[in-house]
Length: 362
Image (cartoon, rainbow, N blue to C red; front, top):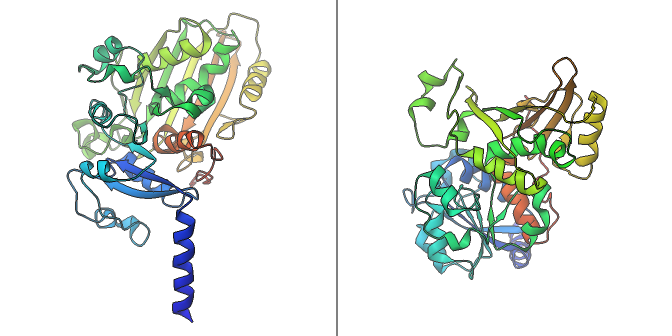
């Protein structure tokens, strides 16, 4: 009887998989790749058909990462195997300056692509080469890429074959100030953005500043005046609001594993109040499931492991400044979760499909 039930279940799963979109993850063994696999494994509308790693090809994913034991047992393939696979969409969880080589080689005819690097976020070859310090090898695809922030760019994402998934810092920054700019409340040249990130935002490759003795019990700013997320934030806010936006962006590294807390300061150009500012945010994000306007300054623990962005905004009458604060999980809404949100839009699925996870607190 048990064998019959097993056979029926296998047949049902096989028939069910026929209607699912086939997905590949290139660069599956970094933090973002692992988070994609965690979220995609139980997504009801897709099947995870191929995962790749150049350095670990031939190994079972769960042997590298025992937390997936019994959940995801696929063998890692070399990236060349993608060309032999019949898949609908590929997530590129590759480093900056590497994803564009993949896109140049494979194009967009065989499958759609969501790139989680910065290679297609900036809408100018010259701007990319200035901030990423490398020649762009396929600039013809830059204009084809849709910027993957659903709350601002949903219609273009639905039609896209190539989506540039936003950076984690830009996601938290843009969502914190977009309502103020779009309603002409603040001076677009006055914005100061102060962001703090957990260490997973720096990737899984060991670095001096992420070395445990340097990080533990420590807290510091980095990338002052020249962080590559600065032009991304300015570009997207300028396009969305049709204004010349300039920001002072300063990132900091927190001694925690995941999460981003961003605080922004801006100068109003109209008479405002705390109540008016809060109402503005409530109305702007009223229909956005993944942006929660909260009634007290947000905490990274209240979004940990989820695709939510918690936003709080107020007005300081004494200094005549608007303060808006956001919190996201840098690996979810700041990377893998937002990428899956984009995938859902591209396939005309329910946008929150596979992403309705409650935050992990504590």
